[in-house]
Length: 138
Image 1 (cartoon, helix red, strand yellow):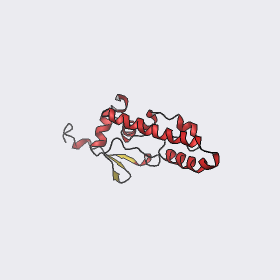
Image 2 (cartoon, helix red, strand yellow; image 1 turned 180 degrees about the vertical axis):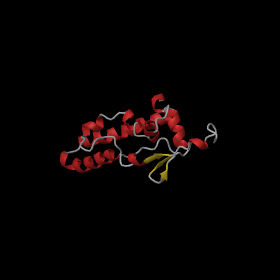
Image 3 (cartoon, one colour; image 1 turned 45 degrees about the vertical axis):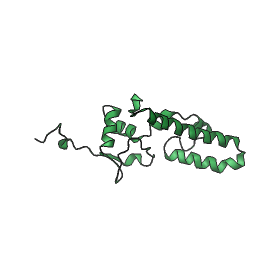
């Protein structure tokens, strides 16, 4: 929890549930006959590739190898921590929840937002140091 700056265990449980749901879908697809599963497999792989959880040329085995950390790495809070050089994940969470982050022209203040791979370059961090009470204007 601490390394990703999660607020409480519930956020961890949500991520675990989501990864379990994705892995269960992959397991169910493996049980289907090959001709039936090809379309559904393609849709699931495209969905996960859009979110950056697997590579474009991934297989169902790659989905079964997904970990909770893979999903937590795609949270806006974690990406802001890396991009903004925040001192801690909690500081990154504060930056996001105070409304200093936008994706394209849309302000996002949800630290748990799962960032798509095409949205990642459009993340902008708007920190005005002069407006802070800690840094009064000269």
